[in-house]
Length: 301
Image (tube, rainbow, N blue to C red; front, side, top):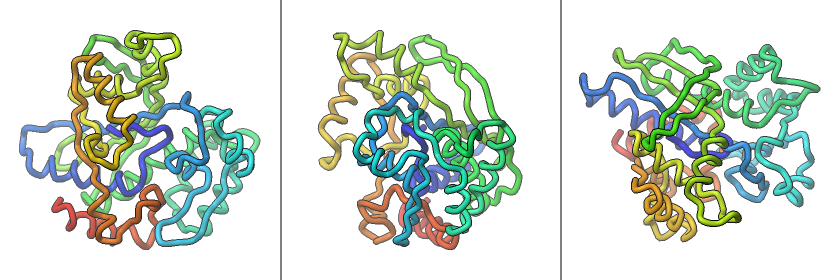
C-alpha cells in the first residue's frame, strides 16, 4: 500500500513491482492474490513547494533538464497561493498534457487521457489531477509489468468496493483498478481517494477540535487488516520528527503498528541512479528497462 496525496512515484512503483514478483516467485501456493492500494487524499492542502505534490503539476524527467507546466492555474498562483486549494481542486490542461506526451515520448500516458475523455471526465480541456495521475499510474504499472514479469494482458477499469478495517469500520471505496495474473496468482492494483476514511477515523481518535488529521491512524487500522505500507523507515534520522510522532500517536491510539516494507532510496542515491531531489521525477521511455535491471541488482530482487 502507498499513501500518496496524488500518486506513487515511478521509482518506488518499480521497487514495489519487483518485490511483488519476488514474493510470488518464492511463495508457491502460500499466496493466491496480491492487492496493492494507492491511497489518494483529495482534501489535503496543495502546496507547489512540496515536491511530492508539485511534481504532478510541473513534471520533470529523470536525467533531463526539461520541465512541463501542465496545470490550469499558473505556476505563480500555485507557488504563492497553492495552499489555498485542496489537492482535489487542481485541474490539469489537456492540451499541455498532450504537448508533454509528444515531447517526452511517454506514450503510455496517451491511453489514460483518451479513456478520461471517453468517460466524460474532461471538460473545457481540463481534467482533475487525481483522475489523470491515478489512471496514468495504472497504465505505468501495466507497462512496467511487461518488463518485470512478462505480462502482456491486463485490464483497467473503474471499480466500486467496500473495505473493512481491523476495528470493524466499513467504507465504500471507488476509483480505478488494474488486474492481471502472474503465475496463476491474481494481482489487483487500485488507486482511490481515502479522504472520507481519514476524516471519520480521525474524528474518533482526535482529542481536540483543532487537532490536525493524522493520516497514519488510518494506516495503522489498514495494517491491522493485513496491509503493509511501502514507506521510508520512520526511525531513520533523516525522517522528520513530526512523522515519527504521527507513527507513535497512531500506534498509541489504535493499538496497531504500521507494518512496513521499507522503500530505502539510499542505495539508489549512493549508486547515482537518483539524487535526493530527483526521487519524484518521471522515468523517461529510454531509461525504464535499464533502471529496472539496475534496481533489481542493487536490491537483490
